[in-house]
Image (cartoon, rainbow, N blue to C red; front, side, top):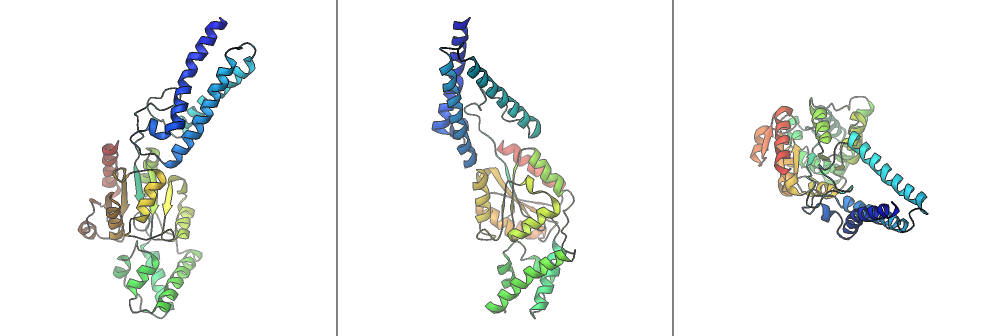
Length: 335
């Protein structure tokens, strides 16, 4: 019986030995050769593979004197059992992982299919039209400039604040422009303090975003707002946990430069063919096109449907029903 147990343990230990060595040497590329994984996944997999290898070697050490090392063998079995419970917790709280797994590792050749949806914020997720125009009028009046009409303001949404103000006040000197930018920021903060800065979600936005997250999409934000604007959005709507990564005007070049899309893809390990952007402004669409990703325009915000089509949006949607159907079709194509 002892010999049978030793042989059984020795044979079974070859499975984790093989996968742990391959995990250390090749990282995530061994299990997902088609790519599409974040660098953090590769890093964590190599680390866990090393632990997997140490547990296997410890198991081997117990085999020659299995009776003497019964306590250690029980400990190893307990570790494996707890690992199984952890996987069960992940399955029940997050969802099922890869369909078939072998010895706790994904089978070679089975690539993880990533889907990244990059969301604009103003005019796409939240209706900020009134708040932005009010803050713009206040700031222009404060610095002694003629306030822009809404139609002029809306065409700058998505750009960085400095660039937007430069377009709306082309006659302003550099000092006046800096004053205008600073005044606008203070005006926006004042509106929030006065209780007039609430930006409601568009009907269907939360449900669409939560559904994508539940279905395994990776979600990102790319906005012309400053970082505190993103924080205010999350404070108002408690959606921070749904987004993997967020990018804004504070982080680098603004729209239509592809920087924010490129960085969002890098952050989650997605490729352009696995990614799309959803936005209401021509600057969102141009940014997506510059990044080489699929572009979905929405007509319920600042941009008009024809404007979005004219700059090359792959699709333009007028409600969340058709947008959701388009997202499902995209997911089917990249799966």
